[in-house]
Length: 356
Image 1: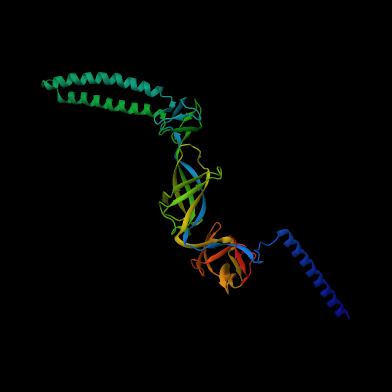
Image 2 (image 1 turned 90 degrees about the horizontal axis):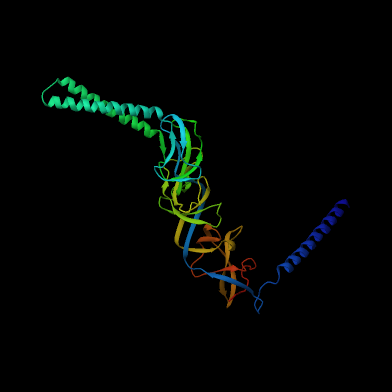
């Protein structure tokens, strides 16, 4: 008895669930609205005629920007900073004076050497005149000549030290940061300021080694910027690195960009859209019409059977998908018609009418 009662309760439960499902299906159907049909009651569909067309596939990789000319300026000699001639944000030209170091000791040494050199030149001229007349000894002539040349070389060395006390811009650009103040000590290798030229930028991106055989130097790419969502910039690959990183199995890919408007900034994030596949002739369908079942991948095409137009399930082989476009590599032929609107309502063998 107990067993029969449990069976009865289970049957009642199943019937109740089925009734609820019917109500839900009816509600969904009423919400979706009427199914489009012609005067004969056939489902109205839209189709795409299969003609060969171009197909491209792309992959995206993140990268960052750097200025090609970006330098941390430092002094070539030690000394106290006397004057800083530039300000942060100031534009400078190549050769402009940026920082002057205290060079009083060197200037005094230059003045002393100049005085000694004037005397040495006079002495040398006198000795040379006497030597030309065979008067005096050769050693006196050589001593005068050597003394003059030594002082000349010494003067050149001191003037070079004076030039080192003046830090000049190695290229045109903008002073972005100044790290020292007047009165502080400048030391070779210690950063005084940062100079950056934004006119030309370089993209550095790390691309997985699996793409190495699909890209090459000179390939066209598209650059997008998270900072400027509506800005897309065409470019080309300027360099592909020769070494694969052991840490993440990637290779460096670079591209050079003109930045005359200076919208791009160093370290800004970018996205590279690179083409890894191209077929000049391919059969392409909307990705949304491609479905799967236990037998494989399929879509619906139009067929004429017994004087009627019916939807017919066609199993196909697909290739790559780019956006809402899928390349079909097998099972579909040029000239066939693929249902692209109403594909989710048709069944295999159902009579349909093409919407005009």
